[in-house]
Image (cartoon, rainbow over all chains, first blue to last red; front, side, top):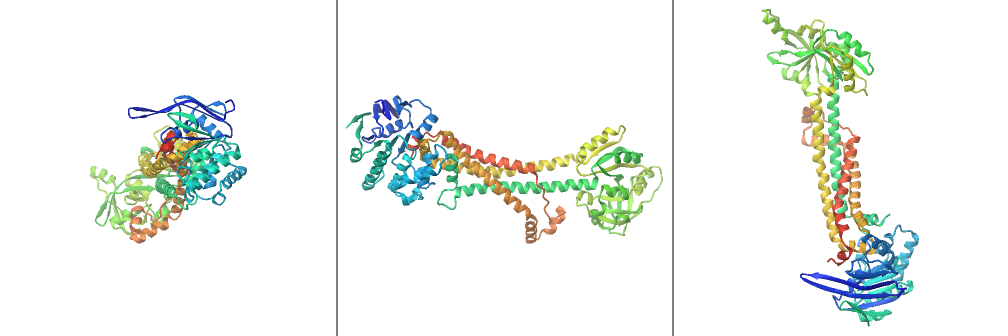
Length: 226
Length: 409
C-alpha cells in the first residue's frame, strides 16, 4: 500500500523463558492507511503489546521491517527514533502513565515540551483538547485527584497534542469499568476521526474493536483479518 | 525551558504540595555543610589574621641581625630608612636574664629598646596595662602581665636582674652585684608566649647588662601597609654585602604559619564530609526516585525523550539542590557570623565561661575574616559534589530502556 501511514512486514520477535524460546511474533504484517482505525484483538500473551512496542520503535524486532509514512525506521538509533516518535506517534497505555507531579494541562503539554518550547497557542490547544475529552473543569487537577476514566482522557489528549499521524493505544480501557471504557473509546475514536489520525487499538473487548474501520486478530504470531 | 529542566523542577517542587520533603531535606543538608564550612573557616581566618597581626605588632615586619653584635646600626638604619615602604626602624638588643622578685626567681627574655624609635615599630603604649611609655628609664623595666602575675610583682616594686655578664665576671674573680630595677609598667600583648616571658628595658640598660658598649643585636623594621615583607627582606639581603642578614616575620615564623594553614586545611576537609554526607543522601533519594519512577521514565522515552535528556533531568536536580543549598548556606553563615559575638556572649553567660574565654583566648569576641578564596572553594566544592550526587541516578535512568521500564511492576 504506497500511501500507508504505518506499515509492518514479516515482524519476528521471541522471548527467552529459561531454556525455552517463545516465538511471539512469527512474521506479523500490518498496513494502516491515513486516518484509518484498526482494532487488534487476541488472547492474553498473544503478543499484542509486543507488536505495538515494535510499531512504536520502543523495542527492536528480530526480523521484518517497519515503515512510518513510507520511511523505513527499522535499525534507526534510539536517539533518532525518539526524535521521530515525538512527532509521528501518540501512545495511550492501559495504565495511563501520567506524571504525578503535573496537573492535567501540564501532562498534556508535556508531549509538546518534548519538541521544544511551549507558547500560548500550544497552551490553548492543550486546553481545547482537554475540553474535547470532557475535562474542561479538571485541567488543573493532579492525576491523584482524577478518576481512572479521567486519567485515560488526559492520556488521550496528550497523545493527540503533537498532531501525530498515528495513535497506538494499548488496551486503553483495561483498567476501566464497562461504562467508562465505552465512553473513553468513543472519545478516542471520535478525536482521532476529527484530527484525521490513524489509530491502532489493541483491545480484548470485541465491541470496542468492532467500532474500528478494520478488525484484526493476532494469533500464532501473525495478524489475520476478522 | 527544556522539558527535562521543567520536569526536574516539578519533581523538586511538585504542584499542589506546599513542602517537598526530599527537596527540603537535601537542600538543608547542603546548606548546613556550607554554613559550617564558612563559619569555621572564617573564624579560623580571623584567628590567623589576629595572630599574624600580633606577630607583626610585637616584632615588626623585618629584622636585620648579623648573628652577633652590630656596631654600625646607625649606618644600617640610615640605609634602610632610605628605602621605599619603610615606616620606621628601631634598634634592639635582647637576651636572657635571671629576674628575682622577692624570693621568686624567673628566667625571662629581656629586650632593650630605644623608646623613642621603638614606638614606630611596636605600638608599646597600646600594650601597656599599667604605666606610661615615658616612665621607662635606665633603672626600670616593663614586665609582661603573666610574668608579673607569676612573680607577684607590682608597679613601683623593685626586682633584681642577673645578666650573663655576671657569670663572665665571676670567671675572672670579679663580683658584680645584680641590678636592682623598678617595675615601671606592666604590658599585655595578648600573646601568651610574650606576656609570660618578656621583660622590656631601655636599650642603654640592656647594653649595660650585656656589656655591648654602643652595639646592638639588630634592628627591626616596620613597613607601610601593602609592602611585601619577604620581598623587602630579599631586597635588603641583596643590598647588604656583609654579615648583616634580613629576615621577614613570615620567614622567622614559617613553621608556625604552616601549622596554622595545615590546621585550616584539615578543618576544611573534615567539614567537607558534611557536604559529602548530604550528597550521599541526595544520591540515595534520587536513586529511590529512579526506581519509583521507572515507568514514568519509560513514558518519557515513549513520548520522545532521549536518554541524555532523561539523565539531565536527574542530574539537574542534584545541581539545583547544590546551588540553592549553597546559597542558603552562605546566607545562614553570614547571618550567624554577623551575630557571632551575641551568640558567644549568651552562651558564655549561660555556661558562666566568659572568664575562661578571656583567660585562654585573650578575647571573648570571635575574630572574623572572610576570604574570597575560601568562598570560591566552598561554593565550587559543594555544587560539584551535589551535581555528582545526581550523576549515578541520572546514569541509571538513562540506561533504562523504555519498553522494559514501561513493563516494570
